[in-house]
Length: 573
Image (tube, rainbow, N blue to C red; front, side, top):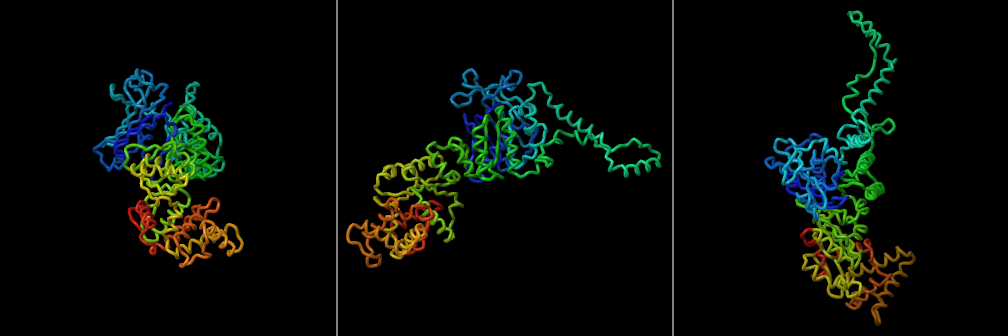
């Protein structure tokens, strides 16, 4: 029936002013931190396109309770068809879309459009209009708005399972209009049949008590000998809501939250076959990860209309494309979009997209170090990464530059935590550092030629390096089993092979030297023999660093880790 091209919101709840063009997007997944305004956007759409004749509005729905400034919500719809665009309806108020912009001249447009506006003044009475800059405003009725088939799945979906006017089931029934079916009579006639069957049942269980009433009434001079037990017609025909969906004999409104939301979505998907609009707030609620992934994948594959949804779940994101995602920040006047370059990160590290700040880590070891740093900050009573909305994203080596650019361009405060070694696979990172820094991206790296392990081993005090060797040996024993002495020997043989000349047989305060530490770093990063190339192992290395934090002198290692800490919450360690 129609799809939303653009949306404007003024003075509604937490949104003072908002203007977003969705263009040709058929799936719009709104993400962002809590209280950023995602649900408010869905509510705004639900209100302006509501099939109800009235909606409940309070003073608190006005931004900062400012009732002097009206609430105004406006949507421009594309792919509008049917009765709404006929001349006797709103054909004279049609607008157009050209180069993704809304214009009033239909003759110059690439496609026609219809703008609907909801305005609520301090009297709290909602008014709906079709709007055109040249023609002005004209009222649009609830019946006409109901033709757009817009419904919202939220915590209050119980009404979706009854056949009331304005509910999705009733809209499905109305689709039979073209077949000559009078939908208003269908339910009433069915209820009349049910009433006749009830009337034919004499309720024998009540006869004994009823006979006593008949005798007593006769005493007072009233003849009720023909009285019968049945149901008052008004109790059946008050409204169509008396008929609702049941699972066997259990009303569907009593089912679990996940099942209710799935059925509501199923009903609305049937409507969307006629190009309806589905609004789903927190789509993952009440569903296991596999069910929500299946739901999102199915909606994306079988989508005939337009879907707006919000989520806080990584299970939702992995089934979508970056082009489906729109980021809402608290107080923002428009949404941020994402580059297709971030598609790989969306699959591998979807939680990053929910952050306020991103530390793009060159690899798993760096992520482990960041996790240890975060734990150390908590231990010291400082603010933690989760509180600050900071996520650690795996940059997958040279892809880190692409991810860093992508996140920064999407409005994230971004830091790149990377190596400075001269290996071929690190050249793309090195050559982009100046550009990234000038762009405004925080860089945490090491001296030229150094990777993480080189810098850590270069600057740790002796006792900490002894712990590093013990940790590497323990990892090897845990992975391969066998005698610890054998693994100690294997670790040292790897170091000796990188030393390049007669190597000390042990690591002591006397044998400690820059050359020996450099050999240790090379052994620790040897291909297929690395000591700390995983998040868990990097975390253990980080624990050693922060265990000896006070003993580390004022060097590059301490300075750069302090810079990471400052990026998280503005405070050093």
